[in-house]
Length: 273
Image 1 (cartoon, rainbow, N blue to C red):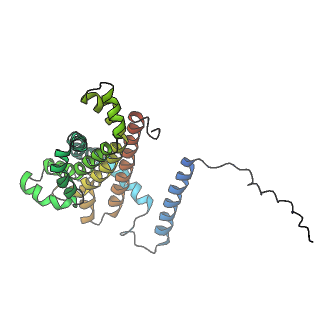
Image 2 (cartoon, rainbow, N blue to C red):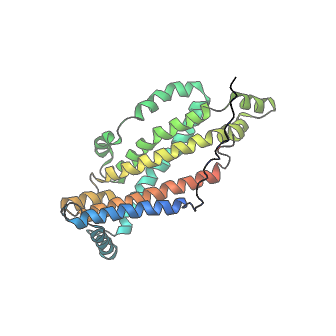
């Protein structure tokens, strides 16, 4: 009879001690690598500078626009115009979309009446409204703000309704059993439970609105970062086009970070439910 002798287990090999780079450093390295690749491609001369200018040319264009502006408008005025249009449409969508979404989530009648309209609007390309809005409201800021409102409104209303629909009925019934009124149930039970979903919808709607305002400025506009892109493209100023794209990306990141900061401040209980 053979006897099996257990072999000693080999201890696991421990990872060599080392310092991990913080996320900020990793992000900085990724950005540096991107700019390094950009510089290497342009410095090689394989792509004409008219099609892809190097980082130095874009920096020179930035300094020139900061000092002298672009076609009669300063860089600050163009940034302010884009932000004003975005915030006008997005703010109106928040003011109207959140209450409507809450109402649709709490009551069956408004949900049955308005939900199909909201869901019809949500997948539509925003620029499909643009020609009609120009005909109705003109080429000024009103048509652009209306376009951004129509872009953000169905997203916000759908998110608010979904947030209310996921509130546990037992919580609402427990509050009512303790004597809470409908207003108190809405304030202390429904809103805290639906707030995470509402802020998620706000972040998606803000990104959609910001990307749409640039497209809106490509049509019948005399200022804004989107106008800078189309105006510079007519004269093959790709350095200004790339500069406007970089500024738009930085503003988009800043807006998203600001909304996340508000989310953490207001919905401090996120993830504890």
